[in-house]
Amino acid sequence: MKNIINRIAAIALSLIMLLSLCPFVQATDTATDVTILFTHDLHSHFLPSNEDDGGQFGGYARLMTVINEQKAKYPDAILVDGGDFSMGSLFQTAYPSSALELRLMGAMGYDATTFGNHEYDYLQNGLKSMLNAAVASGDPLPELVISNYWPPEKGQDGYDADMWAALDNYGVKDYTLIERGGIYYVIFGIFGFDAQDCAPNSGMILEDPVATAQATVDAATKECKDKYDKEPVVICLSHSGTSGGEGEDYELANAVDGIDVIISGHTHTTLEEPIIANNTLVVSAAEYGKNLGVVNLSFNHLKGTCTLDSYELIPVDENVEEDAEIAAMVEGFKSNVETEYLSKYGVSFDEVLVNNKYKFDTVKEVYATLHESTLCNIFSDAYKKAVEDAGIKVDAALTAAGVIRESLPMGDVTVSDVFNAASLGVGTEGELIAVYVTGADLKNALEVDASVQPLMSSAQLFFSGIEYSVNTNRMIFNKVDYARLRNNDGTLSEIENDKLYCVVTGMYAGQMLGSVEETSMGLIGITPRDKDGNPLTADQLVNHVVKDKNGNPVKEWYAIASYLKDMGGEIDEKYAEVDGRKVVYSSLNPVKLLRNANKFTYIVLAVIVVLVAVVVLVVRAIVSKVKKKKANNN
Image 1 (cartoon, rainbow, N blue to C red):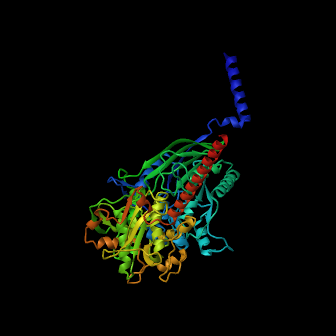
Image 2 (image 1 turned 30 degrees about the vertical axis):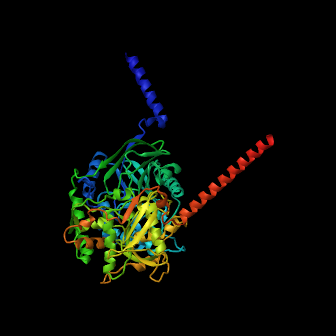
Image 3 (image 1 turned 90 degrees about the vertical axis):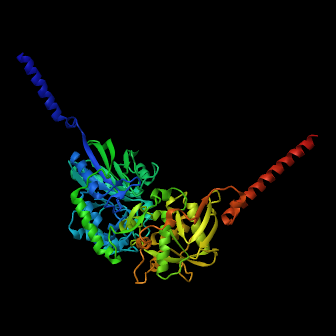
C-alpha cells in the first residue's frame, strides 16, 4: 500500500514539474466575461417622451435606473455612447454656456462618447465654448474620442487656435485605453460621410473613415500590448449608421480588421440582433434613450478574440422608476434653462400654450409617404405669419420632414413640446430666414418634394402659401402638374418663372435647399437670392435671418409657440384635416401625364420617338430585304 501511495505521489510531483515547464498549459480558462452598456443619439432628451399609444420612453433618470441595475449584475461593465448627445430639447439652449449634456453623462458614469453631427450645430464657436464650460464646471465628464474629424491644423485654411485649445483643454483624443476588471479596452470614435453632409458648417476636415479606423486600431492595439502586455477589446463609437442591415458601419466592419464591437449611431436604428461582419458586431439601440443596449462577450486572452454570449435592448419606459439623484439634476437644469433662456421670451418650460383635440402625424408618418400633413401645415403657416408680423411680405414658407423632430401631443401642448418638435438648428435654435427665389426655382422646390421624397424621405417639403398637385406616375422632376400661389385673401396667382418670390424657411432647411443642384448633379437647382436677385452662398444666409420689431432673431420654435398661443386656448379647427394645399394622386391618363410638361418629360419623349423611329427603320429594312430575297428566288 505504501509503495502505491509513493508511486502516486511521484506521478503527481512529475505532473506539477511538467506543468511548471509548460506555461501555455496552465491557463485552462482563457475566457473572461465582458459587458458593454451603450446608447447613441440621446439628443438632449433628459425628460421622458410620449409614445403614440399613451406610454412613455426615455428620460435620463429612468435610464440611470436601468444602468444601475445592469452594473449591479456586471460590476465591471463599461458604459459608452455613439454621439449626437445634444440638440433635441430645450436643454440644448444651454449647450454653449453650460454643457449640460456632458455633465449629466458624467454624473451617470459614462466612460466615453464621441461627436455626432449635431454637436457642431452651434458651429465652432459654440463647440469650443461648450467644451470649455464642461471643464470649468468641475463635474465628472466622459472621455471624448474622435479619430477622423478634426479642425484644420496650423498652416491650413480655417485654422483656429482657440478651437484646438478647447479640444486640448477637454482632452479630446483619437482613442483611449480603459482598464476594467483586468480587461483593457481600446475605445475610438469615427465620423461618417453622411454625418459630414449633415454638418456642412462644422469647419472640420473629414479623413477617410476606413483608413483612419484601421490605422487607429493598429496603433492603439500595439500601445496596449507594449504597455500592458495585453490584448484589448476594441470598441468603435461610430457616428455613421446602418440601414436595412447595411450602410456605412456595415462597410466599416467589413473593411477594417480588429474591431470587436461598433456602436452605430446617427441613423437612429434599432437592431434587435447584432449585424455580424468580419468578426465584428455592429449594434444599435434606437434614439432618445428608448433602450439601453447590453452586449455580453467572452474575451479570449490568448487570441484577443470575442465571442458573443448575449445581446439585449432593455426598454426605458414608464414602468422604470426614476433615479432620484439624476431626476433632481434634471429639475435643476430645467430652472437653469428658464432663467438663462426662456425668460427672454416671457415663457416658461412647462407653460401650456394651447389644448389640442386632434391627432397629428407622428414623425414616422411624416416621413412615410408623400402627403399633406396637418402638423406640418401648422409649422409652415406659423413661419409665414411670424415673418409677416415682422413686416416682410412673404409669398411662401416651407418646412422639411427632416427637421421635424417630434409631433405635437393631444391634450395640453407646452412650450417644451413645441421646442422639442422644432429643435433643429445651425448655430442657433433654428432661426428663420427670408430669401428670394425665381418662380422657376420655386417650382423646382416643389419638384424636390415630389420627386426626391421617394428616394430620401427627409427631403419631403411642406408649404404655406402654395397649392399644387403631384401625379406620382409622371417623369421624375416633372411630377408636379399644377401649382399656384395661395394669397392671404384666398385668391390664386400664377407662378411666373422670371419673377422673384420671397420664401421663408429655417436656416437648416435653407442650407439644404441650396445644395440641391450639387446633390442632383446639376439636373435641378434652387438658388437663394437677395431682394435684388443676387445669388447667396450658404455662408451669406446668416445675413438674412429675420428680426422681429424689437430687433431679435425670429426662432422657429417661438414662431410656432406664438402661433399656437394666439389661437385662444384651442387649436384652430381648420387643422382638423388637410386643406388641399398638396394633392398627391396616381394616374396614367395621357392628358394628366403631359399636362404642364417640362424639359425632363420632353427629353424622354424625344428619346422614345427616336427609339421608335429607329425600330421602324430597322423593321422596314428587314421587310425590304426579305421582299427582295423572295423576288430574287422567284
